Image 1 (tube, helix red, strand yellow):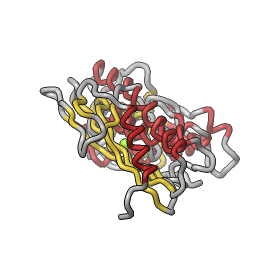
Image 2 (tube, rainbow, N blue to C red):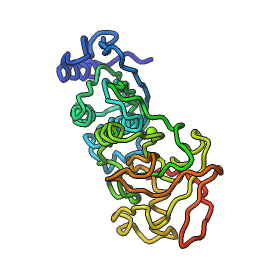
Image 3 (tube, rainbow, N blue to C red):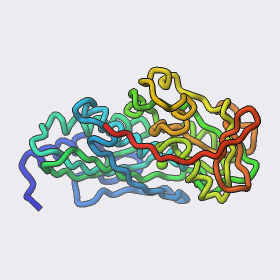
Image 4 (tube, rainbow, N blue to C red):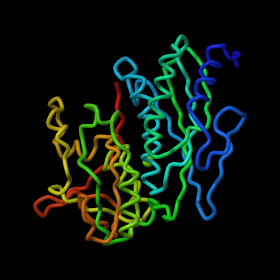
Length: 298
Ligand SMILES: [Mg+2]
């Protein structure tokens, strides 16, 4: 390991000034580890997610503020998927050698902008410099805060399948600027019995396949009910139909969940069935859908 440069230490000093003790945070970044206080009865949920230059963002196009925001928001979206409250996060930056202090501060500020909305403290991290493109990992802690976490595995045959918003075409910009559905997840779980849930990062067809596999069920989607985002109309012409974009484009970061029919305020797009597999139904005919994981490539 190369020794830390003075500049990296400066950055860490600056980061320390950006965080204070708060609810649940007894000691923020600055010591070897942060000290958190959990609430009795809470379950702690933990996950980690990575964003890479050239895959999840393009540092030649996107601002460091937006890149930092996305890195945090993907983790917040995972909290939404389990209906937990973001509690604390730690971040690791692999900066390209020669990265300016301003740039690194903007990355951090973007993460903080996103986390502050939910009172989620960034309680530690690590920076390094190398000759490769920017990579950021964020690990997050969530707490159940009175709501049983919603798993992918609870889907029941006969459940309706819902999504929280229109899908497709996120590559035009929404993949950087989405709002994680944390509050929506808490409201839904407070109001309805949500049996299974996932956030749509890889595309509806792929993520619904994960949910179905974990629940041991299949799904029939109603082609006419799937909400297609207006961005799809603005995409360059391709062989894919608007419906295919809604099914396969990644990074919508809406929630897909299943519950007894009757949920108000979300799009009901199909139902869970006993037979494993995913079908799209249109005008009474069913076509089998091959789940296709989607990745942006810049
Ligand atoms: Mg997820």
